[in-house]
Length: 141
Image (cartoon, rainbow, N blue to C red; front, side, top):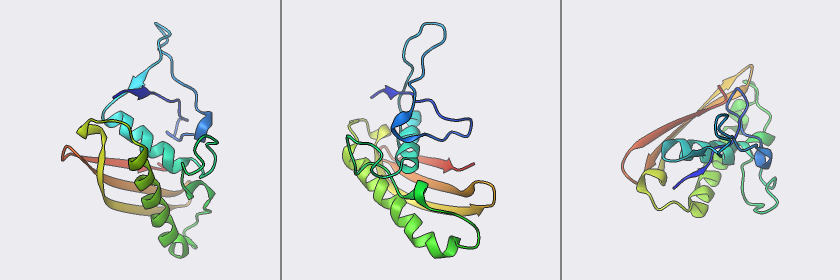
């Protein structure tokens, strides 16, 4: 299944429902993503969109953008952070429309969160897809 490729910042951060669709500079056709790129964009977008920001689906998003990170308070919010990620990925699997096993999340294998002074955090996710392959997604670099 294909999805529109969305424009992100130079850091790969998506901005809720205010993304621009990317056009091919040569043909002006809308660029699309499929496979791993499509899943990577879907996971990044749901985790970096504040819950309630999408007025068509107020359940879409996560609490990550609202959390204030610093190495000092990281241990205090670690549980909430993980719960938000799990909840958002569970929701993403319920709204996913692709029938391709290579584009469907089977399970969340690992969440690693590293506090960073500059960006607040780096999140590393390892997802197992329904076709048996694994996908590593890193946010916050």
